[in-house]
Picture 1 (cartoon, rainbow, N blue to C red):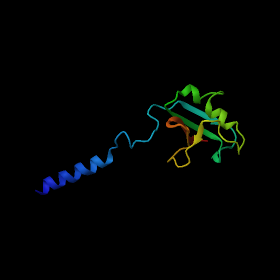
Picture 2: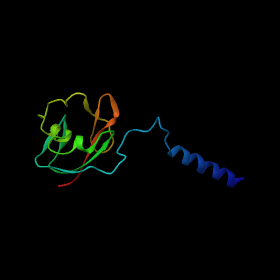
Picture 3: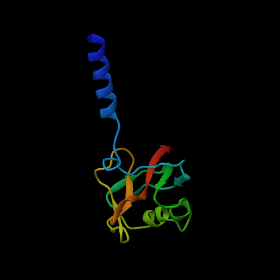
Picture 4: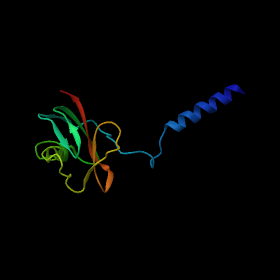
Length: 118
């Protein structure tokens, strides 16, 4: 009887660790797009981006749209400290971990910028 109770508890704890499709939040599902070197301390919509090396991950968007001199991240870095992001982009203020930028119409389309070194 104790064995069945323990087995049931293990099953319940494992099943509570999984997420169904509706409760999952968007996040990088593919390898990173590469690295960007930020040469000077920058601020994007109030978020500090100290100079250093950043890894870019995308979700629901291509790496080409985010990376490079004409990519979204480069465009965001060129904004003034108090400038808003171009529509429809927003910063997810409550995102856990690295800063995330998403299209306001869908949190399933965007990118994450994680500082990985100096």
